[in-house]
Image 1 (tube, one colour):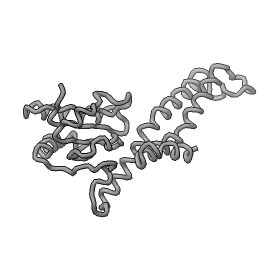
Image 2 (tube, one colour):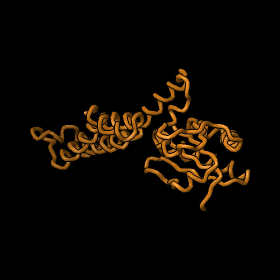
Image 3 (cartoon, helix red, strand yellow):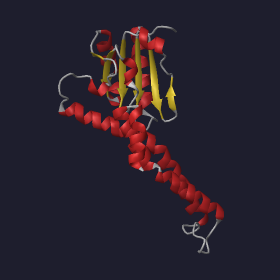
Length: 215
């Protein structure tokens, strides 16, 4: 389909459940109202159902239901409603009604959702901005934590907690390799967290700065 009346982007820090629950809620309400919508999801496996430049250009309004960065700068010139992913799940009908009614704020060129308001950011908006950028870092950090933890756990569970130590009777080369790789993955935790917090704040230019700072 070339034109959708509404487009949306959803995302949560873990990218497992709430991302897709918000997608389903928005799509169900849209079907009931007989309107067309395309929902892009930012899950743990990456971006699915990605919005094209043409679809963004032709859409009447944009709904962002996310607690992480969804590259909102793409929506410059569009009317945007930005809420948390939990609001996207619970209040999908209200969000779609507001989008159809022309509510929301037009996103200016080179402007992120976190800076939509021309006035000084309120305490609530500032707090949400901090939370959103932090969760952007956490969502990218989680795979390293999980992978590293699993490898270390396998090493300990199968060969013993001292199996990585070449001076111990439990030593096993495979266990030592798993422990080394697991430690390396866990060691990436802080640099990746810092990199994607910075990316959420400053977009791509902040990525390297955050990564180096995290190291």
